[in-house]
Every structure is written in C-alpha cells, then in structure tokens.
Image (cartoon, rainbow, N blue to C red):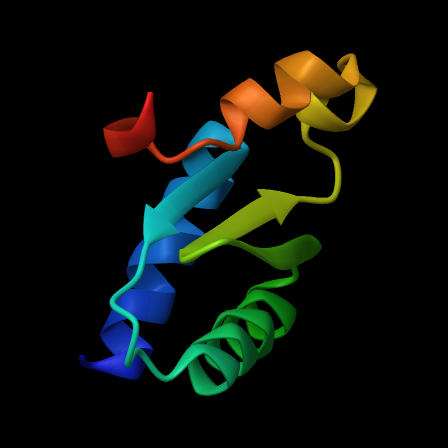
Length: 84
C-alpha cells in the first residue's frame, strides 16, 4: 500500500462527498495511514475526523451533514459500500 497516495485518495473523497469509508486489509498500516490523512488534511486546511469501524477506515469532514443525522442513519452512511 502506498500510504501517501491512499491518504490523498481518502481525503479527496471525503472533501468531495463529506465522508468516505474504505475497508482495509488486516495487515494494513492503519496508524500510519490515519496519520498521513490527518497530516494532509492539516496541510490543505480541511478539518476531518478519522475512525476505524471494524476493518474499515472512515474519514469524515468535521462539517459533514452526517454529524447531524440520527445514529442509525449515521451508522448506515459510515458502513463500507461492500457491507451494505
């Protein structure tokens, strides 16, 4: 996995769509990837939150509409596409 390229893809998707969730392989370098996403977001001036949801990494803009949704709706929106 190219950490910097993956971080850029995740941040681009979150910036465009408010949030992105991507399932990761069990051996993925999660701490390094999350750090790279946060570092890139700071450099671009984008406020985000990251979280692991099982084996999926969520990147969500701090101003995303999902924060104002009921919990069941939020969970559905943050479920990886391949798990729906």
